[in-house]
Amino acid sequence: MVPISATDQIEALAGKGSLLHRKYRVYIERVGVTSYPDSYESRLIHIFPFWRRLKLWALEAHDLALTKLERSNDRDLQDVLYLVRSGFLNRETLIERYRL
Image 1 (cartoon, helix red, strand yellow):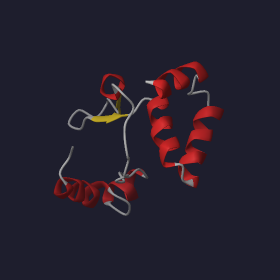
Image 2: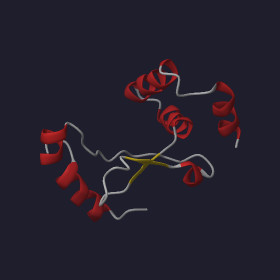
Image 3: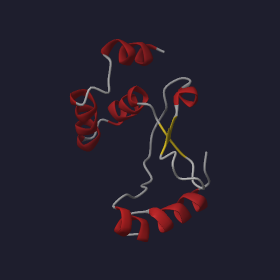
């Protein structure tokens, strides 16, 4: 768990409207998640590996979908539909992780 003060600093440096956002059109946003799938840490994906001084990890697609389905707001449901349409989700894997 990251302390709130650290997340505030990260959002100030890399959040919406930051220099990072204006220059590269990407930003970091704090999102509240009620729970993560079992053993998700073992499936985290290293994103942007070409950045030497910054290491970012993200949920694997099935774990991400499960967290979004739990929240079930419109934006999250649209994100899950995108994952389905883009071929990132396997039905059996999603069901298996849901049952864990």
